[in-house]
Each structure stands twice: as C-alpha cells, then as structure tokens.
Length: 119
Image (cartoon, rainbow, N blue to C red; front, side, top):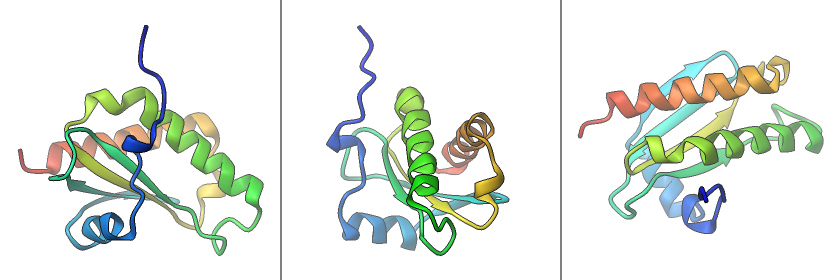
C-alpha cells in the first residue's frame, strides 16, 4: 500500500530550519505564490513549510484551504524530489486561484526549484 501520509518528519517545524531556507534559497514564483527551496543537509527526504499570513488571507477558512491544498500536493509528489526543504509563502492574489490551479502551480514551482538546485 502506498505511503500517503504527511508525518511530522515531512514538515519544517523549527524556526532554525525556516531560517536556513530563508537565508540560502532558490526562489520560484507566480502571481500569488512564492516558493523557496534549499538543499537539506539534515534529512534524507523532502520537507514542507508553510507561511500563510493573515495580512494576505484574512479569514481562517481561506488560509486553511491554501494549507490543505499545499500539503496534499506535497504529500502526493514528495517522492519525486530529492532532499529539498520547500517553503510556500502566500502573496496577494492567491485567494483568486482555485484548488486545481493552485496544485498545478505548486508542482510546477517545486519542479523548477529541484532542477535549479545543485546536485
């Protein structure tokens, strides 16, 4: 049976790990979404972090939708990427993107970053 969970080991949890991604990252973006990627030295698998500010999406329902879509897209595609830490940052305009388009955008941005990172 396929491993379709999103366990703790697949998440960026500490501020130190977020700081490493913010300081040494490759960026990829489209209107409404910015993704940062950093080659992880700590783990042997990819991890995901989310930054969805209240200033961009006022209602918790809207923020939770973006988080849910990002986690699901990552969960289904995490085996495709080497050990990379990804941070998804919501920007103005993300509210107008529907779920299927957001999933496609995230997968494209993750692919861009994984191709641009040094092996």
